[in-house]
Amino acid sequence: MKNKELEKNTPWDDLHEECGVFGMYDFDGHDVASTIYYGLFALQHRGQESCGIAVSKTDGPKGKVTTHKDMGLVNEVFTQDILESMKGDIGVGHVRYSTAGASTRENAQPLVLNYVKGTLGLAHNGNLINANELRRELEYTGAIFQTTIDSEVIAYHIARERLNSDNVEEAVRRAAQKIQGAFALVVMSPRKLIGARDPYGFKPLCIGKRDNAYILTSESCALDTLGAEFVRDVLPGEVVTITPEKGIVSDTTMCLEKERQARCIFEYIYFARPDSQIDGIGVYDSRIKAGRFLAMDSPVEADLVVGVPESGNAAALGYAMESGIPYGTAFVKNGYVGRTFIKPKQSNRESSVKIKLNVLKEAVDGKRVIMIDDSIVRGTTSDRIVRMLRDAGATEVHVRISSPPFLWPCYFGTDIPEREQLIAYNRTIEEIRDVIGADSLGYLEIPRLEELVNGLSICKGCFTGKYPMEPPKEDIRGDFER
Image (cartoon, rainbow, N blue to C red; front, side, top):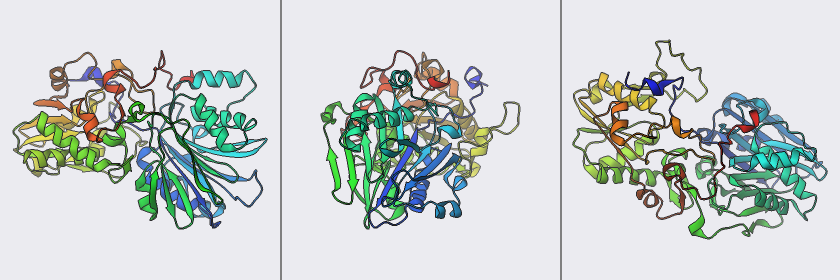
C-alpha cells in the first residue's frame, strides 16, 4: 500500500464542521419544539454526534426551561412523545460535531444557565481562540464548569455581563467583545431571542420568518424545509434581538469594514448544503464555479467526469460543463452511514470506505476518469477511492480537488489536523499524486477562491498560514481535557 505511513488508525479523511444552530420565537404563542426538530433535521449535515432542544414559555415563570439533549442523530434523540411534552413558544436547538471538547453527553448543547436574572439558553457554532484564558479567569472567581466546551465560557460571560447591563442583548454584545475567534450564537432569554455573529463572519447565521414566528439558523436550507421566508443574513459582527414589541432590532457596533471580514471558504466548498445561500452567494453556484475553474486551469483528456458524493458532485458537473467531457455517476453512496458508525478495525476485511461508497463498474470500466473531490486531508481516503476506480476497470484516474492544498491547521471550528498529519505538508503535488496513486492531480488555485464567492472577503488561513487574527501559539483544541 503506497500510503501506509498515513494510514495510522484514521479510516475517515473527511473534514467536519463544528455545529448547526437554530432558534425560534412564535409571537402567537404556539409551541416551537417540533419545528425546531425539523430545522435541526435540515442541519444534520453540520453535526452528527449529539443534538438538543431547549424551550420556554414567554408568558410563564421566568426560570422554567424544558430541555432534552443526547448523543446521536436528531431522529434518534427525539420521539414524538418527547417533542409533545416540550411546551414553549421560544426555543433554541443545536446539532454538534466536536472540534473542541470531548464527544460526551455533558458537552451536548444547547446549554441552559440559571442565574440571578433568570435563565439563558445558548447554542453556539464555532471555536474560540481565547477560551482558555477566559475560562481560567472565571474559575479563579469561583465559576464551576459542567462541560469542557468553550460555549460554556460564552454562556458564563453573558450571565456575568447581564448583572451590569440594562438588558440581555447588551450583555451578549459585551460578552461577544471579550471572546475571540469564530462564533454564531443563538441565545434564548425569558422574553427575547438573540442572534450574534463574530465580526469576521467565520460562521453563517440568517433570519427567517414563518407566519408570526421568527427564526435564526445556520443555513437558509432549514428555512426552505419549514416553508419559511428568508429575511436576511445576520451581518458579521451584528447582534440582532427579536421580540414581539419591536420585531428585529439590530446592533452593528461590532461590525468591521467589509475588507476585514473573513468567512470560512469551506462553507461554500464543502460544509453547507448546496441548496443554501450564505451572505448572498449560492453554495451550489460556488461549487459549479470551482469545477469550471479546475477545467480551465487543470485540463486533461478523459472520457468521464465524476464527483465523490456529495460535495464533489456539483464541482464535477462544473468541470464537465466547462470541458465538454461527459458527466456521470461512478459512486453509489450508502445514505445510512453517519459519522458515528462503528468503524472497522484495521484487521477487519470490511473497508470503511467501501461501507460508505461503492463503484459502478459498468460506468467506469475501460474509461479514463476524472474524479472530483472537495479536499484531501490526510490522503487515506483518496488513496482507497482511486484504487476502487482502478479495480472497477478505469484505465486512468485523474484527480481534481475543488480547494487548494491544506498546509495549516484551522483554529476557528474546522477540524483540520496538525500540519504533520496533512498530506500536503512537506510534499509536492507530484509526491501527493504518487501517494494517492492517481495518474494526475490538480488543485484549485488560491486566487480562484475569491472568485467562487464574487469577491467576498474570506479566510484562507488553512491554505496560506495567514489568518485574519493572530492564531494561538499552540493548538488549543480540546485543551480542557488535558
